[in-house]
Structure formats: structure tokens, C-alpha cells
Figure (cartoon, rainbow, N blue to C red):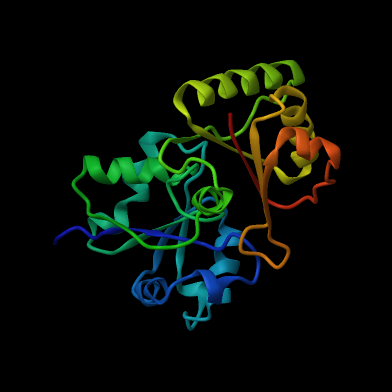
Length: 235
């Protein structure tokens, strides 16, 4: 029996945005998939249920693949593929494999010569970059900043130096409850002329995207809501 394929299934970024951000090809492809690798079974079931394409969510099979999954568990997780079935990877938000543990499954698939099929969908990182007006030809995604205030400030200054040297847009994310702390660190640590973009609740009802110089942000510092956010800057 030939092996199946690994499908990278995009998920929504903002609640209720299925119809405007998930393309028809995803709906069609999902109809043939019964086995999934997911970060959280509960949210994966809720997402797939919301798409209203399965007669019963109970008939689907979910296995957990998260940041704590050891590589030696991958052969077991890929059993459906080795039996000829398609296997879908679902992120908690956006596109699998981008700032996401799904990359582990993709790497394993390549090692085993399993076809990898990425499907089009929303990525907060790319959407924020597109809308920022900052350099879209030289950019880097750095994930989360250090929690310690001193280390955070040092990291920001280091990234700003790299941005100056390379004309590189630096892209960061943060957990929603720390949005205001990160904004404060950015405003305290970046030079006045550095361009800073705040991209909040992308694809959601309260989407907000704005780019201004740090000096201009300091004139009226916003109180950021606890929503998913992307921070971008260019020195």
C-alpha cells in the first residue's frame, strides 16, 4: 500500500472569520481527511465543527502534536499515513509549521519521503508585514521576547541594531495579556525615529493596524486590549 500525504491545514486567527479567511480548497480537502495532528484536541474539534463539513466530529481521529512531543513518538503519530490515509496538521492559529510545532511533523514527513501539501490560509505574521509598510524584502520573525525586563530591553536593542545594519524588519509576537508590557519595553528601548507597527486582532471585528515612529507613539500611548498581536519595527 502506498503512503498517504501530509496536509497542512490553516485555521482561523480570529473567532468567526471562517467564511472570509479559509478558502474553498481547504473545505474540499478536509472532506477526505479523518486523521489529524493537533496542538489541542478541544480547539481543533471546535474549529472543524464550525466549518460544518463533517457529518459527525466523533468519527474523526485526533492525536496531540505540541512543543513537548518527543521525536520518537512521530512513527506512532504517522501510522495513518503509512497505512495510506491522508493526515492533516492543524495549528492553534493560522498556518501550521510557522511559529508552530507542526514543523516537527513536516520535517519527519520529508525524512520519510511523504508528500507535504500546504494549503492556503491566514498567517498573522505575513498579514501584519503586508500591512505595516515596512521592509517586506528583508525581514525576520523572532517569536517572543524575554520576560525579564532587563533581558527584554537588551534583546530589543540588539534587534534594532540588526535592523539598522540590514534594513531588516523585525517581527515579534506576544501572549495577549502581556501586550502592554511589551509595548512599554519597545517604546522605552527603541530610538525615537524607529518605525513601529502594531497589528492587533488581525482578520477580527476589531482589527487595528498602525505604523508610526516611536516618538509619535509616545505622544499618545494606547492601552492595548488582550487580543492576539504582532509587533513590527524597522530602524
